[in-house]
Length: 445
Ligand code: UGA
Image 1 (cartoon, rainbow, N blue to C red):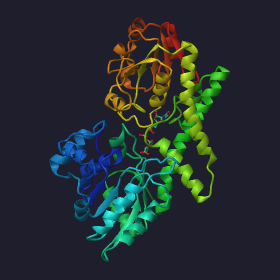
Image 2 (tube, rainbow, N blue to C red):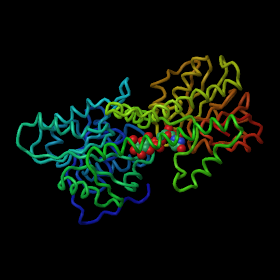
Image 3 (cartoon, rainbow, N blue to C red):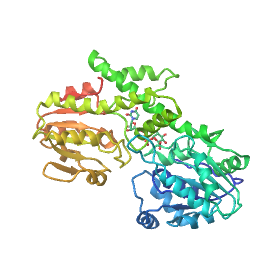
Image 4 (spheres, protein in one colour):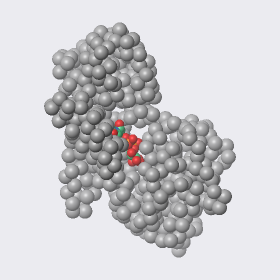
């Protein structure tokens, strides 16, 4: 991990409760403790809290373990499964619970309402309640209503919004070196507290009202997803026209108005954020009276990238039944073990339904993968890419892990029965691969 933000002496320290020890909550809790605040990190999952107390991290995130250990040692970070106790001890409460998607695309806000009720019943002094989870606009307003409805005394409180922009796999770095910090507030008191909490993090702070702050997060994630779907649609045209999407990305990205980030064509975006946030933003827009048709198309293009990839493999292999396919990369992106809404899951399911024999390989996600796919004669698991490709008819690269970039391709070719590489992330150099004697399937190149 690079150096952490310098701590300024004058920065005020707060007693903070972070509700939810998931990717957002646990990272925020560990980082707030690193900034010198006293943090109570609470989760209703007692097993998770017990393991965290023993310094065992429930998911893979670079540098998180050392930060958690440091926090526990300094007593700045305390794990608990008692929400009422953590609330009464804290001045500021960050809500970082899950807002999973429902069948209609809307976000399930049950966990948020439950936490708001517990806060209301344990409001033993003024508290600032901050929404950190990604939520639809008007959630802050609802939290305020709920607390007013259930609180038992005259104690004052403020509600605020402080959306999180960190990326899995780079979460700690993103926390200490954010492009911006967004705070949505209704009072100067709340604004000052949040500015104090982040006092030693160097970043532009955007102060706005709560509705705008909530919308910023949905708009930012949806825009990034749109960029990816846009370049993926261009990749389809490239396939048909015999052009190179990578050169197009490069040339487009050098225009500073466009920017080069999030213009990598591939099998599409996955993870627990973009797929659900694009849908939730479209849903809430519709509910408010605007049909955000663009976002529906973004989703459709994203799904087509997966089916189009499978179709290309089929074009080469013809019959998939009985063919051996090595899948390199299962997580939705490198440096995480997260497989939620990963493109690999849909692709693997289609291969299974066509009767292929699969060897699934990933440096971090095998435990997650085994929760989705049962090991059998037809589905095997390994961390070793060379074992995976042995005797196979096709190598499908689905996540661009650093380890896979370093592969000895001559060795890979010798091990494979038929030298076909389907590169779902445009990770390999097409010319080099072809020179080595492989057949190559890329995305728009
Ligand atoms: C995303 C946002 O980038 C964060 O700013 C945000 O805080 C987070 O969601 C969230 O809402 O919590 P994350 O889901 O960790 O972060 O992953 P990204 O790095 O954004 O990647 C998302 C997906 O897009 C991955 O499947 C990745 O492979 C894909 N992608 C990304 C592309 O296909 N092409 C690209 O050019 C970039």
